[in-house]
Length: 379
Image (tube, one colour):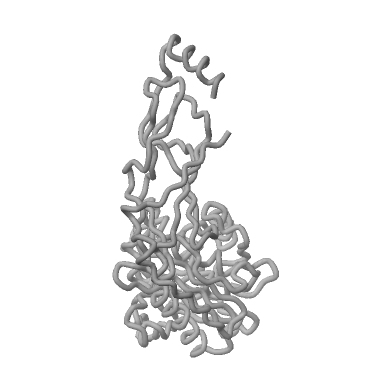
């Protein structure tokens, strides 16, 4: 049996009379195969145009290469000062691959390789990092595919570490947004490398291919990609007033177009949505009836702050409904899921978040449990 409690959170939201009844303008229609706008602050998708359709990632593959390198650094398997000598195999460049211009006779540090990977998009840097971390690019690709599972990138499969076209090398705009968000969230100390506009190695200076770093003051990174079959692709991240959005544009017709289309998407999200904190972590949202425990009520809430992005002017139309499974029986552990908080906007489902117990409650003694058994017969 479900116990449903519906309520308007008067302390959190303005009264309905204050709401501005303005409709949300349609999202921009972009000249791209697929695109998606992700609100990092609230973990919401604000715009999704074929975002779950399979596409080639091209050099956006290197987001995963970077993620695994950052992970190896965190696990002390690598250090930034560590030097490696590139192998002849790693320096084999096919066709017009982008490269860092590594020298087989010149040791290079992990810090330099990271900049060659992120700023210069060097395939030679990718292969050296892959060999250093896993022993070979093939084994490194195995690590990449395992990491996709952990990050819930369920529609992604890698066949190489550089992004070269391959029938079994694919992803989606949605999965790339998850990966970009994971880099920002998990490695804030390394993320600033993505904001570098240029990098010089071996007396060769190369500019970052992310044009938005020059034309949009709010954009502070991410990654570009291009192959003839994939088209021009861009994952961009921008921050305004402590709010971060991530855009993914796949398959644009030109370098300049992927930048302008990405900017349209980011501007739309910042202009027409606002992010609000609905609930604070570890603060009780309600007390729920509990049976057979040392307490007859348990405080429920969230283990992290809950943010939500809503169309500007429509916050007062938000309605929260708490659902818990009843009867709720002890013992209960702290952090155990006990229900869901469902949010509707304008009468339509909008978002939902799991409710957890904020404190443990052990079993009561035999007498109290027996008395609760009798009372439950009449519920």
